[in-house]
Image 1 (spheres, rainbow, N blue to C red):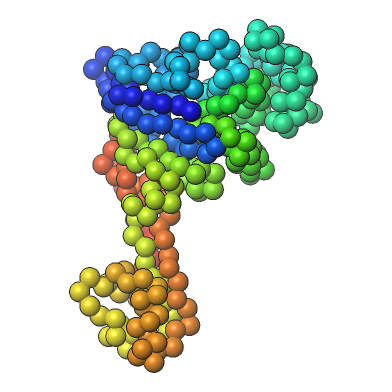
Image 2 (image 1 turned 90 degrees about the vertical axis):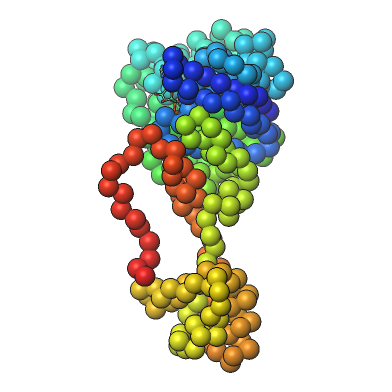
Length: 309
Ligand SMILES: Nc1ncnc2c1ncn2[C@@H]1O[C@H](COP(=O)(O)OP(=O)(O)OP(=O)(O)O)[C@@H](O)[C@H]1O
């Protein structure tokens, strides 16, 4: 469990984290999202005692990180995958960290296997690809078999198999009752991995909820219908607040009525529907909507994607 109360970090006049409160619960994967410069890394660094809060507090399992007697066994962290000593082998790197924390060589071999590094364990870390470095970073985070795991962009540089591995690993760690906090800019991946989301922008919390509620709160659901009697259906369902758009593929998209309401109205009018479906928004749409006014670094020419209307 991670809890933050009125947590603030200022660098000179720059407010990186602006008095935020949140809790990250055990048994779930919590996604940490926000535009570049939103304050995610700063918050994660404060959680693990690498940065001192300007005000407020943040605790892991009821205590500030630094006050834990065996922090590596309490919290596993991946903040910078390039942090490993380049001249050492992966095995020696892990062994040296393990040795200073009273962790045995057996656990080192376990995490090497868990991270899929068996075949390269004896190779110099300096020659590792970005993906191998990420795997080593995750192995390091798991070394102390911690109850809380914090990973900043863990899938960065991983191939599709590696991305899936991280997803499965995070889900299974949460299923074991651990607390998992994960940042990523990959929305589709986050949508498949996280149970809850904390979204921040310019150091403030924009959303903190179950992922489905974040999406439904920030996007609108539409009803997608296909019929040979498009015009009659449009006349049947016409009402204030109901907006109908004809899509390029011949289907129609309706806002303001649920799929059930459309089906009932069509049935009462004797209109045959070939397709009727409720289409909810995506996490990417929700994220873009939530962070629209909060982006520090934005490209000047944003192309709107979407259906032809
Ligand atoms: N050591 C520092 N000195 C001064 N400003 C800093 C420092 N570290 C971070 N900042 C600023 O604080 C803000 C938050 O940065 P942070 O790295 O936490 O964002 P982030 O959400 O992790 O971004 P990204 O997605 O790009 O990693 C940014 O405006 C950043 O420039």
